[in-house]
Image 1 (cartoon, one colour):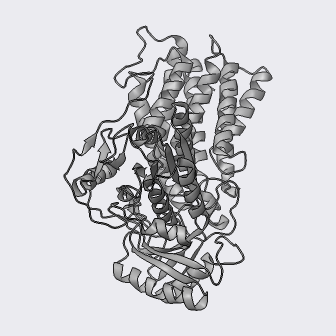
Image 2 (spheres, one colour):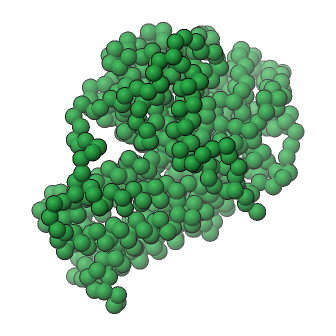
Image 3 (tube, helix red, strand yellow):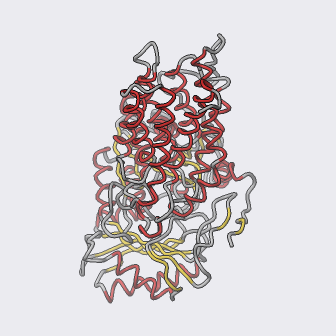
Length: 594
């Protein structure tokens, strides 16, 4: 039976902010940007904006992996780290704030773990920064060796090996190398590192129940760092047997994930996942070193053991092997004051807060409102009703979405969507120009971008931006224009997210909805009838994901048999708000009669 997880926290929604506040109080060499709650960025206190004369190295991702990534900010490692909410990719605006805060004329390297949300958000931030004149490079780390060659577009996950890439890149930047040279060293390091994790327990997200997925005598092999199920559940085994299995998988000549063979040299990292005593990690290290040397003929140049990249309170460990050479060892041995490497910090304590740099040409100040001065038109009233119904439906569906997502993902789909829906309801009364359909859709995107984060947030932001671009081309928004906007939105999400029909994503609800809407309108159906029919297609499409094998997102890492009979939470959410909007429009225009 699942039980409420016990945490030493205050409000679950404030854990990331309060963690950062405690971090900078503990380590005087660190600051944070004064942009809570949306912007959560930790940076070096000794770097002055615009005048930093070395390559800035920035990383980050969802919180819950502490001390990664903020604990690796310091001279010789990261210049800044960007935090999202727990297990949710940081939003584009946060990443841009970090880039603007620490990047000087030498440019900036982004080091990104290979997760869809991180790639999208960091990638979009890099493109925006380039347009502002910054020199940018990005290296994606996918060091997971647990899974067979990846299906679909997701690729190998980024795990604890990312920390070693941080160190190599940070030391190279500290040595004064150019952006191209730092990026090249980071890319090389990312290509010679492999990791696999095992867990004795499932992590518990703040404010949520603890999953009972693992029995008291079971352990999970090959899991990621977001609470998603691993490759296999097996009976609890001794640490020696576990280490033998993990090393065999990482060094497999069948997958050839790691270009290392007998006679090579390597670096070993034994990493705790959050609730593993240092004693157990050291026991694993004591087995791994002779196993590498005597069984695989690999010389171990360095051993790092500790808790570096976690999954909240998960009991377990990961083992990372990096092929080493003189250049990599030079970077790993270079001095650093990053507190979690670990190293002590000293010096005078600067102010904890640092102002958030503003973009060069802000389009609108935060305190500006877009509420129309005139009364709502008929179309404005209909749009308001549709938005309110959609948001309310998502709020009511929160627990169901979390329950589905806990079985096929990281368990926070409902919470993420709820955050966006509640913010939309708050913003719509004071910010949305309801008589301007295009402007309203654009503002919904801005709301989502501000509060949601993660893959869902960036994809819905892209969806709204594409719809806005389509709608603003016409002075009068007709049903056909709405259909065109939906089609453009679907195309944009597919383009940037990489998914299409049958990938088990929200597009499996929106693609059939778009197709049916177009078809029914072209056939001469009444717009409301066409809208309702397309919402039924969306619902059917979402239900059909129960039989699909995931090809995108975190579900693609999960065995197909675990996905059977469970719908994709993202598709169910999309179908729910779309259906609610259609019924609201029908009721507004025709009343409750069918």
